Image (cartoon, helix red, strand yellow):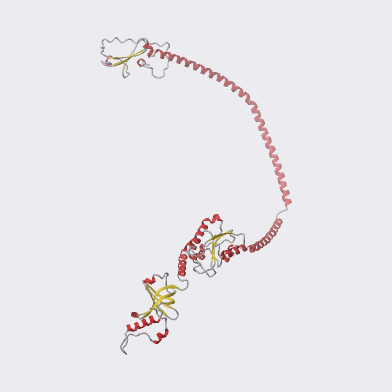
Length: 501
């Protein structure tokens, strides 16, 4: 069923259906409230849009507030299911557009607007997002003037981040070329509008920040032409603000027209109203520079002339205070002649003294005659050498004689010579020499050494009484008398006989 269009005459004509009551009977309050609500529903459109300022906002799940202007106040209600979809932070004093239906609420006797949607006046949600991000970044110090760097007056190379197809780039290039062609330009082509624009701009800023030293950049210009707030929104994103805040060299931002303001411009070191103004700030005016150079040259020449004139005056004043140079030179010459005479006299005196010393030393040297001293000492050295040679030869001869005597004595004591005369040496198996019969019980194995070998035997019996008498050891007298001094103990005769070598 379609609703009829709004007809004001129906409201004034009183054609709304009234509840059935007895003729002349009074109406109840509920009946009147129902009549008012029915009249509102039938007389007004189903949805109305109301512009007003929020006041007395109360958010307790449901939103209760009033919309007011200069002449009236309208009560409003937004249920929690609707209020959760508004998408912005409503507050008292904010101008909004409310959409909904008007009904009369009988229990409280109020005519209210039941709000289905609510939006700020103007840019709406984007404007609120802009303000919220501005407050957040301002609290973090992104907009502080103290952190902003000064843009160089004579940059050597400037990077321009913008769309290569935009009119803003053409304006910047023309302006900089007219002002100063010495400034080198590096163009970084990015999108400046759309969903992907903010990411590309931030990526370009991070790349230039990382390579600014190798690229020899002195400043960066971020720019684009004018447009709506939606067109410029890429420059209001947090990612772009962070990239500008962390950029290591000065940044200039010129976004849109003079009346447009973006977060990127607030964070940059310098904000310019238009791209042309930014180009004029970055590129110095060449003609003006030439004029300044000419003026500086003239001022420098004038200053040098004044300095030279003053220096001449100072020299003239000092010359009047000093004595005449010829008198100074004459006095210096007299002092020099006196010093030269004193020097000559002193040198002659020292020379005479050294000549006398040299004569006395020559006389002493003649008395000493070094050649004679050397000849006499050579003769003494020859005699001493001859005596040393004779003493050494005599000592060697005596040592050889003592060695011969020791060798003869050793040969006379050699056990092998004793064995060659018919003697033998009997040992046990463990190498001990047998000296008594008691040491060889029956069964003992013996080893008897003779002059040409050894004989192995085994004891079957022994009788000490039957043993032959101990032969007397012949006395071995040395052929020559023993030396008067012996070093160390003399060898034992039995030990010599015990040797089997």
